[in-house]
Image (cartoon, rainbow, N blue to C red; front, side):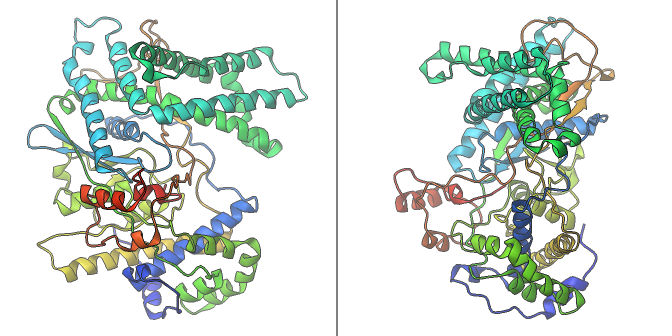
Length: 584
């Protein structure tokens, strides 16, 4: 829905821009868009300065457990878990959004990622198609009257193996970081004065041993099979550990608010352990969610097509004056009045805090290249192809899923947009490498399209200004250290005939082929990403001149674009998105 208030917007319109130094690339942005980025830049500087001075995010505590009590919740979880399996690398490039719509025959899965090349999108298409075909080819045998006791377990295992191989680079990194987190927790226990239960230390050592297994999957099929089996063993151990009376209880106790106040270093170590355990268990829970959805809505897997939308092109730096201060920005974006004067007076304190330093560092980064984040890019595609109405969505469920919660700016975009579509709640983190899409519609005049975009810029700016005033007034910062939660949600198994059924997970710990049934509810990890503000690795091959040469007439990457930049760059053919820091 549109933002209703216009007083701030009108005041901004009446406030002339202070002179800002810029190069030719920054001229691509309108003055209103520069106002938006100036407000974002000041908010970013305040957040970074507060963090550097020891402040913490106001909502960094884990989300409480909540049951997924409606079929709609399962559907949303299904879409999000599909997206999470497509998000195969850390750093933000492969963050993925996905939607299910009605196709010409059957359903159509449409997705895009933050910054994938065309060939990478093609690989992702193939992965998703094969995954869905695993379920289609099952033809409901896993849940039929003649199904064996372990039929559904075997089906989940096939999905898990397929997902692990596609996400191998991320999983390799998680294995390394998990081993480090376990060692840190063992060290933390050794430093404690009070007696530590021996079984807790033994359990940590046992878990650490299970993280150390051969990972040379390229040596042959036997090695690949051994790797997948070892992964299964580790996932089973991780699930048992999170539920155990010793280690599971220790993780809960050492990551509570009391331990955070009394022993912040200890809290950090155990929080990291919990985080990376959840990261790995996410693959097991994703497979379980997908099979639950398959059991409840087999029509999603009967006839389907898979389509990817090109990632957006990075745009040039919106602000290039690396001499900016908080005072300069306040004078530019805030209308005259008491609030303006009070902020100007506090700018000296901001400078002492280091806000100006963070502003100038960011404005001076040649790698500041805003992109359209995946969920906004996908939404723009649906709008341009007249597929945004709820009747275009499968089962009229108007939902855009994502591999992680939306960032703060994407949350603002969907909050103010007139198209009422549901997305994942925001984690609140602010990333500056974000921009609005450019819509193209041959049936709408260029002037009307520009006016629509200008209105959207104004609406988003108004919400950002509210954030900024909140930060200035209350001196608290919104966001999370990790841009997804490591808490879990409880998902009941949905059966087509009987509605909700409680399903055992004890026997299927990591989809081993044997076990026993027991009553319980399926724990689904709601997170799927790495730490907030993760930086895309920069490996060279992209210059300021290259960025300026990117045409803003087309917002999507094409094969010809990639070839052009490959010819300019080094032999590694570095993608533009590899240059973008702190993408998500």
